[in-house]
Length: 294
Image (cartoon, rainbow, N blue to C red):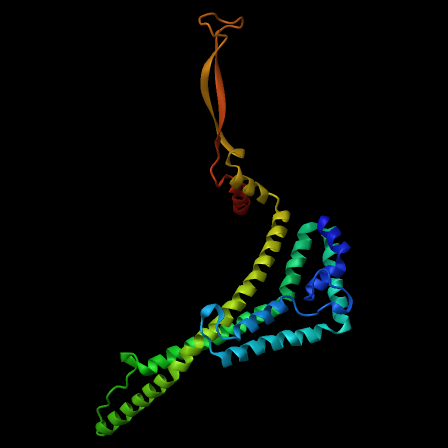
């Protein structure tokens, strides 16, 4: 297997890349960090300046969120500096390499996808935590807006008993207090939303990149396990490779000379040309549908 030979020949280099280093670093100059950890730190430093792409952010909140992200990366870097971590990582690379020898490239791609998911768990965590913060802000803003402008059905109903005037005054005072609190609290929550949304979108992009890489590996594994997928790709690239029928077209008579009139020694006949008619686009899916229907 080509993939197994490549990994076995470059085990140390692949291990360095998996631990946040570069392909050509050696010895004491090798940096240890979680996968894409340097990207997370650079992204946090870029956002904490308060004006990414010209968008004005809240600098104290951006600094706080950036420090949380860098603290996570630094903590993982410290944990990965233990001597056994590098050996475990190297053993994982060797396992993925030998899986290609035993089970072929499909098993190797599947294990590589699982290892990639494990090594990028911190990106998924940053994405989830930032989405929870944005969701909480939006829910708080909606709640505060209902205090400012409550729906008609949520307004207190008038009670017919004897203390009607006192109840009306108490209800109105509570409504006014809610409106004042909502007005004062809604503005900060709304103004801080672009800052948290910027962190959320950046972590979403990083996490989406890792998901795309994992999906590509899973696609390679599935394609190698089900070879008929290549027929579908060939059908999309070359429609004429899957004829659905043949047309017959007469182009002349056999044995007729160019000067007119005389027949050949084998008698008269017609010359026809056969041309293929492309099959429908869903024709390669026929075997899959038949297998699914049993």
